[in-house]
Amino acid sequence: MANRFVIIGGGPAGNQAATTAARLGAEVTLVERDVVGGAAHLWDCIPSKAMIATGGAMNDLRRAHGMGLRQVHADLDFDALRSRIAGIEQRLEASVTGLLANQGVRMLRGSGRLLDAHHVEVETVEGTTEHIEADFVVLATGSRPRIPEWAPIDGDRVLTTRDAYPPPTLPEHLVVIGSGVTGVEFVHMFSAFGCQVTLIVSRQQVLPQKDPEVAAVLEDDFLKRGVKLFKGARATAIEVSDGGVVVRCDDGRSAAGSHALLAIGSIPNSEGLGLENAGIELDGGYVVVDHNCRSSVPHIYAAGDLSGKLPLSSVASMQGRKIAEHAMGMHAGPHRHLDYDKAASAIFTDPEIADVGLAEADAFASGRKVRVTKVPFSASAKALINDDPRGFVKIVSDPATGVVLGGSIVGRHAAELISVIGLAVTAGLRVTDIVESLFVHPALAEALADAAE
Image 1 (tube, helix red, strand yellow):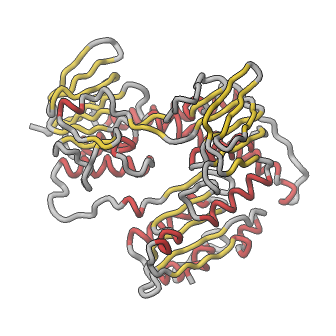
Image 2 (tube, rainbow, N blue to C red):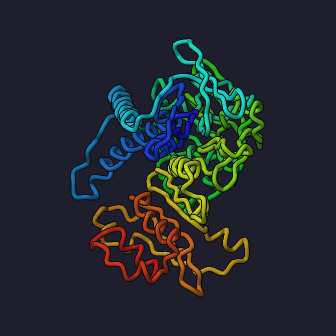
Image 3 (tube, rainbow, N blue to C red):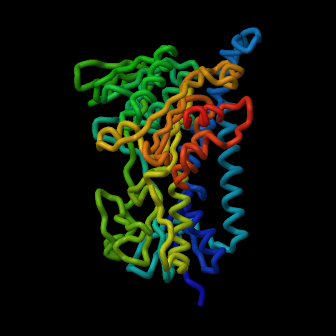
């Protein structure tokens, strides 16, 4: 008899686990209550990047004079943007559901919970209840925005990230609380739309977990756009009136605007899953998993945001594939486990930011000897052709062996270019492997070879 998989959550992790397990011969049931493709993916990630792309197009037009063109002005059509986002979401969901159907995956619309270690109860959107016996269970229910008690979220003036893709109306002055990845992306997109933006930065730099040189380039760009930065300020209260909002900070400062947006992290969707019925161990609401993504109950796995690992769609998808392969016996012997330290990530601001592997600051903090080489895009012919010489390429390597340990890129198409360094880190390549590669000329990728020399 085929192995029976029940997957709760249809995001990147659940989808990949479902398609991989089905391809390997398993009988798969996928339970999703909201949108197949994942709420975080299709309601957060995809809409935000669509909005950023629109803002990027507007920024390119504003810089048209640098390309030898007369200044071009573009006004935002908010309704057209809404339609564009909805169309992208619908096409992607249709693509995902079509793939699942072609693989023979059974899809149930509803909410699932564990009755015990081998039985799942599903309450469907139609109001019926179904009980399913499972040999393997994959929990991939994602996360939701974290909302502190002092934030009066109303979806109108005070927004979470879920309320802002796009918001009900275009803010005149948006106060963004939180200067991590999501926060700075919101600052970029709304300032590109022409909104006035104030960013509350609890530390002394935006992107506190990133390279200070990277953060400095982004801060400089924000200031040139007229973004106000409240550094070293932690929001403690939001006051709402008919005319707007006032965000109070712990240092006595306050920021007034038409809208406030909360971007201070997320919490896992682990409630209501019946985890206690199966004896699954949690840590701060996240399911504790091993290197194979197994929970404390060996045949029950967790992936994506629920696993407490890197909250990236790419990581979730890889976890889903690895889970299915492991459960189906493909990883019985030695194999390559997921190495979260080698996951590439990107921030879709303007300029883009991307990094992978060991960071320069972390290497020095741990006392590890590294070689750091950096090349500005101002030395790149392609960057000058694009009239966008902002940013740089930085590569971190082992001085004794030349093995590439990590790198960061700030500049146009950084999210694409980081893949070269990511491959080098994963495959254990040396800087000489990059130097001796024949890149296209002129191309931004040439800066990678220059930095590796």
